[in-house]
Length: 198
Image 1 (cartoon, rainbow, N blue to C red):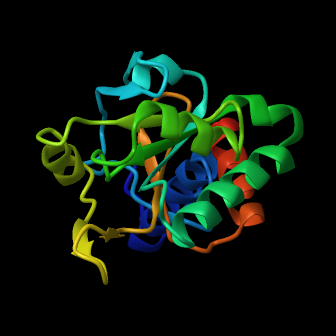
Image 2: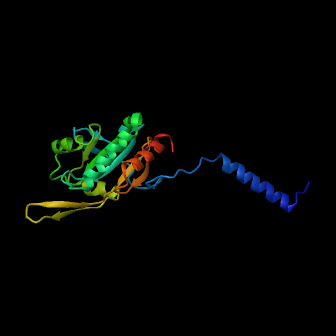
């Protein structure tokens, strides 16, 4: 039996609608969706307790990674405070959020200093560091910018650096890039979606 052109067109359209109805609705995030990115995939860094860490250590949790330095006057403490607030906003799900702070200032950020620094925001967060000769490669693999800037005195300096965070889903896949100053609620909402399987 031959179908008319109109009838064939209607059948194709109906099939397309049926397939669309079966698809998972696209999630909208506050942060930038970078699902499938070929960078920021993993790391192998030592934490402030001397333990070697990779993303696999945090399977089952959403992970938020921020690159900064402990003597940062505003951007770093603001970002870590927002992350700590987001963990609180998640309630019981807060236990499934792991905050990580990667130092871009290995000259001054000793494990002891980092432990005290990160603990002031949340005792469950970890500070990670790379050796000075390893840091450039780590930063490159995360597309993170940093630069030492000489201060007013010869023996002083500060660090210019990228100011966003990478967010990973519970399977260890990089999913989002959160720009600086997005706010704790927006971060908590995004993490919640990832924990719920988005």
